[in-house]
Image (cartoon, rainbow, N blue to C red; front, side):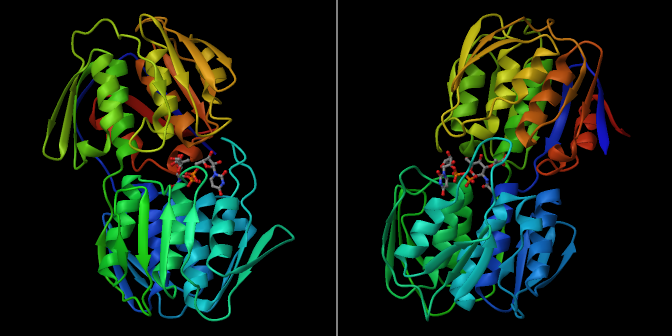
Length: 422
Ligand code: EPU
């Protein structure tokens, strides 16, 4: 296993290009199963998670090739319908093949993901939704065994809370159903808009893009197409928070500022100067000795994203006041707190809330810490970049699930960071 070493305390300067979004690439890759033929996807990040879903596609009989950031996926020979525990346990988003397999083959056997580091994360909304479309789902020996005779039947589906992959899975299934499906209280994350656009190019008929009510008029057939993955708003947000924490001035390019409304507002309140210009965002933190404290509460889009909670908490731990971080999406997403304590943070957890007493910009010091999940890892990277001295982060495979070339990108911004074998 590899660990990441950071010699911290240096401000970041320069330009960093944002990669395609992991959480858009995964559903768009799964959507290629819906139609035979050769699909082209552009701006696909090369990450541990995108490699996992491609391995899953291979296990179903699909072939693919990558040329730079372009993927060509030939979905003609979809011959198997089972997503095994081995793959699903390493990446929950594997459940995204359920909808496409049911739509194309009328059957799917997908391992239940089980718990993960950030919470229980059930898939009951997905299952209930498919049952409403006429699918029979049996839960046996850790698998969902789903089957339908003929096409799924359009219906009205309501989510108790908006689910991102739940909305995506049902969108894909309903696109080939007979009749009209309405998804109420649908998630509105930009990655869902990306999927709607791809399905539309493939021939699907979907109304309500970007809203919490999606209407899908099922069609008999979809066609292979060419689509582009949107920029990764969480990667962009992570670099912006890193610059706010270290000081300096950085422009993130090839991103979509409109996808980060809540974070940009919070960073401005924290005292950062931010300029949005076209597809770039520049954050200037030069000369700012103090970071103002700001409260955040995670919410479905367009609220503050849970995937940027840990990173913002690291920033608030270096502020000059007390802030409240309220996590409403996942019940166990404070794993980074114990590790941040090892670097000088003063944070108390009370249920879904964390009371963060800022220790100031210079209050952090390097320490050996352990990555526990993807976003917790990036908060430790931010803390390490800002801290005095050396930080060693073990188990960085978590980081590699969602950040493309992070060491290279940070090095280009002037950080001293490298990987070593543990
Ligand atoms: N939920 C249920 N039952 C379900 C589905 C969801 O109770 O069947 C609950 C969840 O436990 C959670 C809430 O509903 O409390 C929302 O979860 P959601 O289904 O939206 O999460 P997800 O689709 O599994 C995606 C992202 C996550 C991101 C969340 C929230 C992908 C591949 N994953 O997960 O990304 O945190 O939405 O925005 O899109 C990450 O990239 O680090 C990551 C964890």
